Length: 84
Image 1 (cartoon, rainbow, N blue to C red):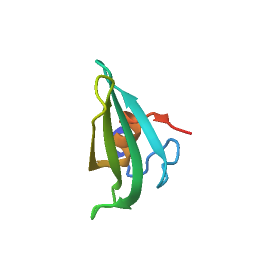
Image 2: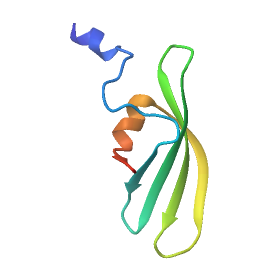
Image 3: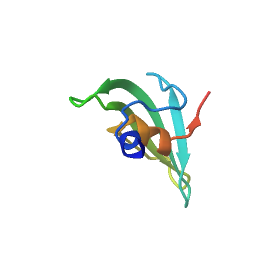
Image 4: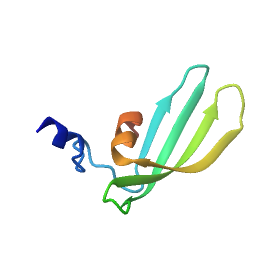
């Protein structure tokens, strides 16, 4: 049964919804803020999160914005701090 658990497509944890924002802090004054754009399954049925990401640096006013996609499981592992 353990092997089958590795292939399970469902992921347990808090529900991730479009419009929600999450934050992750890096060393040296860099903060990452992401906003969920949408969730969809890939052709194999694996859920993925499409999100915009912004990097802010304490030392400057400049920020960098991009769009990324991660599997739902990876997204939950990386972005744990939900913003209110």
